[in-house]
Length: 133
Image (cartoon, rainbow, N blue to C red; front, top):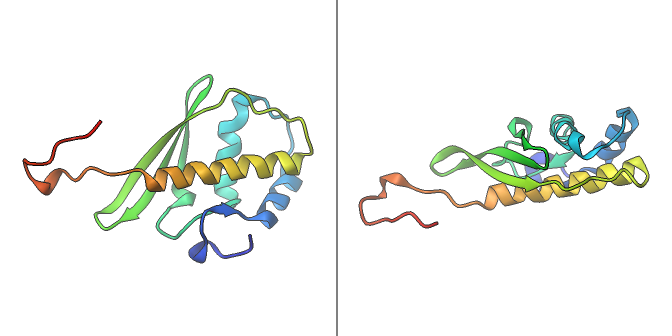
């Protein structure tokens, strides 16, 4: 995908993946997925619509096998942070580095898309609205 971030749908910038793979060195145990995603977000490996502030997204390690992605998203109500919990059982490095990174970037793009699609609650609508769990 070679579109600029301003005109893009969710996806992976293949050139950025190649560049990221060329500069990255190290092993890929599952515990390192959080910093890998952080680096991908900083390097612009994942692209999204303009309303999704990919460069401001946060990857938070919640436990040994759980991450949370917090994504600022512009809405008609203003800038909101939406989050998605991600279960990470393992991330094997069993292939070519670029292929592994492209797979990780694709999963990250899907999580960003999920965060963007999460509903919000408008507290100011009045007493008739009930929260839905």
